[in-house]
Image 1: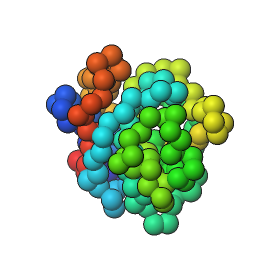
Image 2 (image 1 turned 60 degrees about the horizontal axis):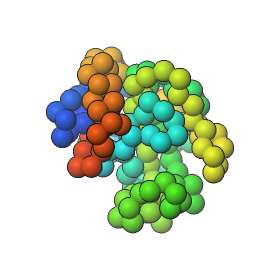
Image 3 (image 1 turned 180 degrees about the vertical axis):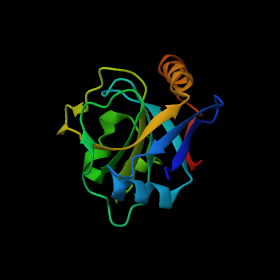
Image 4 (image 1 turned 90 degrees about the vertical axis):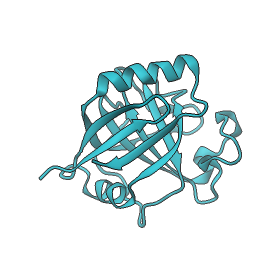
Length: 165
């Protein structure tokens, strides 16, 4: 039986529903499912294009490692990234000192992709593969509209929440 999660932009009051890809990414699905609910400051991607994400302190033990990886996510992909501290704490990224980006153990990035032509390439570290662990099945258009609003009007005060459905 398929498992589902809800992903919400809380301040904007928008949510979507995603189906976990247990067959394709079992370790990642287990790590995320066991850690839910999780919520953090929402960010709109600077490099990857059509991405909204949150950075959290690492929660998987052990880290799932690579499975079902991509560097070209498509609309509706929900992606897990595990970053070491040196990969995410660069001052050029603009994260404030209190954010999970500056955690000594690194950060976990949970992201949704809402549009086409995404490329996970970072000028500092190169390719940034992520684990696709879910696919949005309901509410993608509403999330995309809210994500474009984040890009145009800013992310301040917005949170991105992942919860079991």
